[in-house]
Image 1 (cartoon, rainbow, N blue to C red):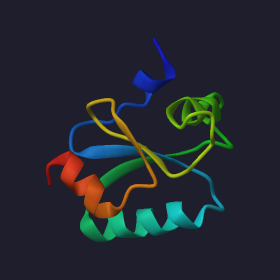
Image 2: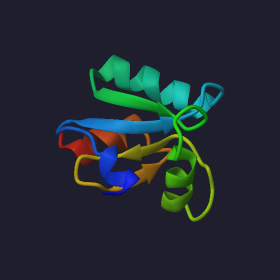
Image 3: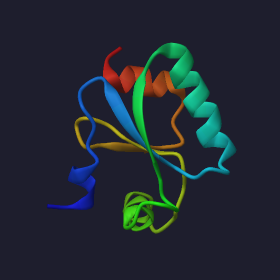
Image 4: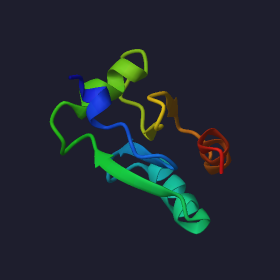
Amino acid sequence: MTLTTDFVPAAESITMFSTSWCGYCNRLKKQLDKDGIAYIEVNIEEVEGTAALVESLNGGNQTVPTVLFPDGSSATNPSAHEVKVRLGL
């Protein structure tokens, strides 16, 4: 079992790794809410091990938002449009 598989979301939704102070995260959440796209938000400053997970997905950087898709793939700071396309919505 790995942390990545622990956070793989259900179909047609995403897991968003974020921080409370991240403007890009807040913008993406507002856009996803507007478009009715389901997501689970995980604050990497509060959930043990998730900062390291984000680093592993981003070449050693704790870049947020990092989004995890149902197929296990990820994207760093994606647009809401990219999220919709990758979810097939």
